[in-house]
Amino acid sequence: MIRTIDAGMTDARGRSVTLRGVSDENWRDIADVVPKDDQRDWVATSGARYLLLSEREGVWTSLGVYSDELVVGHIMWAYDEDDDRNWIGGMLIEAQDQGTGIGRAALLTLVDYLRELPEPKGIRLSVHQDNLPARRLYASVGFVELEIDEDGDLTAELADPDAEIPENAEV
Ligand SMILES: CC(C)(COP(=O)(O)OP(=O)(O)OC[C@H]1O[C@@H](n2cnc3c(N)ncnc32)[C@H](O)[C@@H]1OP(=O)(O)O)[C@@H](O)C(=O)NCCC(=O)NCCS
Image (cartoon, rainbow, N blue to C red; front, side):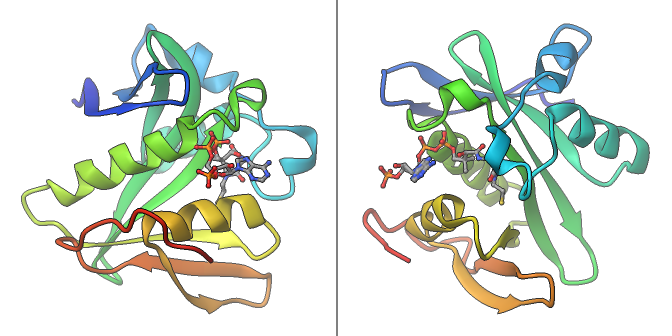
């Protein structure tokens, strides 16, 4: 089981941002992570929903996002054999900790981890078209929007596992 994924990232306050596997010690704190009220259209109302999904379906791997030793978010990933891609989902940073660079650091840490797997794959995620902050973040990390479904959900892909992450890409 994965314990800690550390790509050496820090947030804007210089705190170390790492991802850690779900354990007896941290699951309650991850379950309690909540977004801002006006973000509930785009994500689950708390980390608990994602933990249950991972636990029940056995497809996704949930990870806690840590700022130093504090749980501040949730993120998860899964391999989809239908499209032979690794997917990132369930990205949620605690409301009061948003906007301090944790989300970007967590995303880059997971991307780095997925690229280092023995068989790296293209990386995909889904984001609602109205979720502009998230779309901007993903685009700046190098995700390219591919298609949109009838519900307004966009699929975006970081296609080349060996590609450099652009520093200042924009939507
Ligand atoms: C999207 C989310 C994960 C980003 O995490 P975060 O820790 O707030 O992001 P960061 O602080 O690393 O900021 C990343 C970029 O987004 C911008 N940003 C963050 N929150 C923002 C907001 N509410 N409005 C506008 N821009 C915002 C930051 O300015 C930053 O851009 P910059 O690097 O060019 O300055 C977080 O806002 C969140 O949990 N949102 C609710 C859940 C959600 O929408 N998840 C994504 C589902 S696809």
